[in-house]
Image 1 (tube, one colour):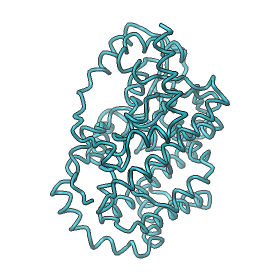
Image 2 (cartoon, one colour):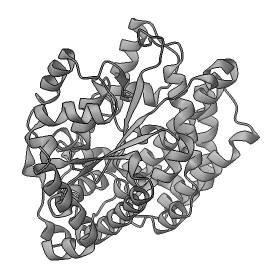
Image 3 (tube, rainbow, N blue to C red):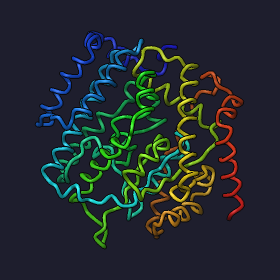
Length: 413
C-alpha cells in the first residue's frame, strides 16, 4: 500500500532527494563519510575504544540499505540519525574524559516505565516525572547531551531540537499520535543506540532483527547510564543534597529488564497493563505512520504479523523477568490509572517510595489536562491482517495476567 498518510510536501521532498539514494549502493563508504562528518561536528576524533560503536552502526546502515523499497528520505534520515547519535556519543565520551567526577555520579533507584506501546506509558511517565523528587530526561538534553547551559543557550538549543523533530509537515497524524515537545520528558530510546524501534518505526530488517536478538544489550544501558551521569552532573539537587530520581520511559525496555538490572541494580520497573486486543491496532497504526516516512510502500498485513511477533517476544521476556524478580516490578492496570487517577496515583507514589504532596495534586491535574488525542488515525485490527481471536491466541497467557491484574485492583480498594 502506498503512503496515503504523508503530505504532498513529503512526496516533493522525497522526489528531490532521489539522487541521494546513490550512496546506498555502498553503505560502508557512506557510513565512513558520516563518521568523518560526525568527528568534525563534535570536534573530536574517534579512537580504538569507539570501534564497536562504529562497527555496530555500520551493520545497521547496511541492513537499512538492503530494504527493498527504502525511500530517499528514509535513507537520508537513517544516515543523519546514525551520524547525530555518534556526535552525541563523542560529546558524552569527551565530557567523561575531561571531567572524571562525572563517572562518580550515582544514578540511584531509577524508575523505568515499561509496557506495550499505547498502554498509558506516557501518562505514567509524565505523572511520575513531575514529582519534585524525580526527573525525566527532556528530549533536547538527550539528543544534545552536555553540561548545564545558561538560559539563552538552552533556549536556542530547545528551539533547534524542536524544529529538528517536527514531522507534522510530512505526516500530520504525528501531532495526534505522539506529539513531540523538546522541553518535556521523552522516551529514553534517544539515548539507546540500538533497539526494536529501528524495526517497528523505520523498516523491517530481518538481519538486524536476528542480530539484535543475539545482542548483549548491557552495553547500550551502560551508555545510557553514562549519558544520565552527564545530565546529572552540576545540576540542581534536592534539599538534602541527593540527586533527583530518574524516571525513564521506553516501552520496549520491557524486553530488556535483565540487562537494565545489571547496569542499574536498584532499578524499579513500572509495568502498565492493558489487553493487547485494544493495543495492537493502535500500535500498528503508529508503526504504519512511522514507516511511511522510511519506505515507499507499507505492507500493512505483513506489518501486523511482524509487530505482533515482536510484541509477544517482548511481553514473554518481561513476564519471565517478573516471575524471577517480582519485587522489582510494580504493576499498573491501565483502567485504574486512566479511570481513577486521583485515587490511584498517590498509591503508586507510595509503592515507589515517593512522597505525595499538595504540589503533586496540582501536577496531576496538569498532567491530565493533555488535549484528547484525535483517534481518527487508528485502523482496525483487520487493516493489518489481524483479528481479536488471533491476538487473544498470541497473547493468551498475558491476557490472563492482565485480567487478573484488573480483577485484583478492583477488589483491593
